Structure formats: C-alpha cells, structure tokens
Amino acid sequence: METSISNNEPMNDLQQRLGKLGIGIPEILLPSGPDVGRWAVIACDQFTQDRSYWEKAGEAAAGSPSTLHLILPEVFLADAGHSDRTRDIHRAMRNYLDTGVFAAPRRGFVCIERDTPHNRGRRGLIAAVDLEQYDWSPAARPLIRATEGTVPERLPPRMNIRRNAPLETSHIILLIDDETDTLLPGLGERAKKYGPVYRGDLMLNSGSVSGRFLDTENDLAFLAEGLEKLADRAVSRYAEPHPFLFAVGDGNHSLAAAKGIWEEYKAAGASDHPCRYALVEIENIYDPAIKFEPIHRVVFGPGFDETLKILSALPGFSCRNLAGREEMTRLVAGTAGGPEKGNRFGVTAGDRHALVTTSAGGISTASLQPLLDRAVNGAGGAITVDYIHGSEELFRLACAPGGQQAGILLPPVQKAGLFETVARSGPLPRKSFSMGEAEEKRFYLECRRLFS
Image (cartoon, rainbow, N blue to C red; front, side, top):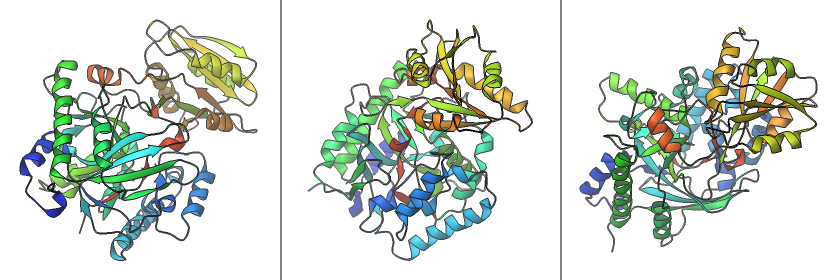
C-alpha cells in the first residue's frame, strides 16, 4: 500500500526536494459535495467591461455557496465602497469556514483536466509555491518569474483582500517549459487510479473540469523527479547559474500582491506562515490544448483619428483605411511579429477600420504599450485604456454607437520562445498575451486556509 501524506507518514526527504523547487504541499479546502456550476467562478480580471457577465454569474450562483462571494471582479474596481466589499469578502470567507461549507482539508495536490469551448484535455496541477522564490522585479532572476510588467498601482486592491483574509482561492497559473510534455500527462495517468473529488460543467458555457487528488509517496516522488529534471535542464538551456523553472502565465498581479503581503509578515518578524505560500495551478506551455491569444486594447477618450495619431509615433508607421472588420482581422492575423516582418495592428471605431503597419518586430506590445502609456500619462485623466480578451468583445466595445473610443486589434502571439525571451530580457510589457479566450480562463475552485 502506498504511503499517503494524508496519513501523516514521514516523507521529509521528498518534501525537502520539492521545497528546493519552490513547491509546498497545500492543505486543500473543497466544498462538501461541490456543485461546480455554482461554486466555481471565472478569474476576476475577465469581462472588465461587461457587467452583464457578472450579473449572469450572480444569477448562476444564486442560493448556493460560491467563490463569487470570495473575490472582487475588476469590473467593479472603479466603483466606490472597496472597503465595504473587502469586509464582505472576509465575512463570507469566515462564514464558509464556520458553517460547514467545506469538507475536511486534505493535504496534497490536485490533478486537473479541463475541457473548454475551444480545446479539450488541458492538464494542470494545483500546488502551493514558495513566495521566497519569486520576485517580479524586472532585473530579478529567481526560480519563479513574472512574464509581464507589474504595475504597482494595481496591487493595493488585491493586497487589501489578501491581508487578514481567512482563506485564499486563486486564478494564478504558472507555466513549466516541458518540451516533451511528459510530466503533467504522467501525473494525469497516475491520477486516473483515483476517483474525482469534483467534476462538473462550469457556468456560462465555459466547458467542464474535473480534479483528482495526488498525495502518495510515489506521486510526490514522480513530481519531484520531473521538476528536478526541468530545473537541471533550465540552467544550461538559459545559460544562467540559477534555474528558471516557473513563468507566470496568468495572475501576475495577484501573485505580486501575495508576495507583498508576505513581505509585510517578514518585516514584522515572521519566518514562516501560510502567507509565505500562494495557491497556483501549474500548466505546461507546450500543452497542445493551451493557445496563446493577444490581449487587445480599447482607448477611451480619443476617437478613431486621434488614436491613429497616437500610433503614428511607431517606427516605420504606415496606415491605410479598410472596408470592414473582416479584412482588417485577416490582415492583422497575417503577421506573427517576427523580427523581419514587423507588426500590424487594426484600429476600429464605429464603421471605420484601418490597418497600421510598423517596422518594429518582436512581440507587438513592446512598441505599442509605451505609446499608450505616454498618451494616458499626458492626458490628465482624459484618456484611459482597457485590456480586452477576444476580438468579438473588442468590436462590441469599439463599435458601440455614440461612444468616444477606438479599439486596437493586436496580432497573434507565438508561445514558443517565451521562456527564452523572459530569461534573456526579463518581463514583457504588461498584458502582452492571454492563455486562451476569456471563457477559457482559470476558475476559482480550490481554497486554502491562511488563518485559524
């Protein structure tokens, strides 16, 4: 019979090996007999211009415990009453802990399989990661690295929720660079020996998910050996003295907020605490079910012509008007942002459409984002930018009648080479890519206790 950490058997060697790889073994909280369709809710940074989505989420969760009551969707960040919302979130957390919503905690990892409306069989592993081995600073080269620029001004609302929160639930995804795609499928095969601890359809037509616990000595040994191989390979692959094992795929700011809270505890003299760790899902960048998508921009304030004027500062700028969105979408999709090809952007507002071409190669946000930042900073609040997942949502917002806004359609993103780019140059500009369409984003599901 395999030794299980759930039975409190000593496995110090394995735990130490995992600890060197930045991995902690979490105590997972799941609701008793979870109704996945009501309990699980999409990441808070989705549908940031679509309050109707979140109203529908509230209707789907009505009358049942739900992670919707444990998060602050970013669509509401501009509203007043953040402190009241934070108190309500903490109150809901305590209520769920005190009233038997959760089953007994179970120590181990959860192996996930997710089907989305666009792809099937995406694999992941729920784990805790050591924030001592993560740093989002652009010059830092730790084991766990940010892939996109972190905006300090975006951290306080997230930190306020995590500070003194009785528990956490997470939409953070960390990527591994497993080119042979063997580790997570191998864990998935091992997990098939066990029955699912949850399985069901996700709300609002977002596919389905199932999870199985991995908590035996052999499971941990398999995980430790696989991560050690990736860490050893990373040292030579990226020509660095220290391994680069995990890249943040989603939830850069949420992980940075968790780091900020842990730094507060350290400053107060703590050396160990549940807040030293953060709950994440680990996925493989080479999983064929993971597609990278661009994150488009909507510029509020200036209209079509003024947005083109902002973009005219791009290197080698040229622009031509187009007859419709279909032609614009096709032409923008025809560039992959290679070093020789340059990049193309679509600009759309109302019934006007244009193709912008620049000689700047590489990832498209490297040339675009500094221009938008300068425009926002120089406009004294008259210009704002939002970041939109999915071209249909972009067109809905940019082409709404009577508005003073324009949409910027970004070209496709290549996921191959992400680790090498981050290892060489540090984080990409913020909001450079999305792991799939909006409805494919990670759903809050598993929880972990932070305070007694």
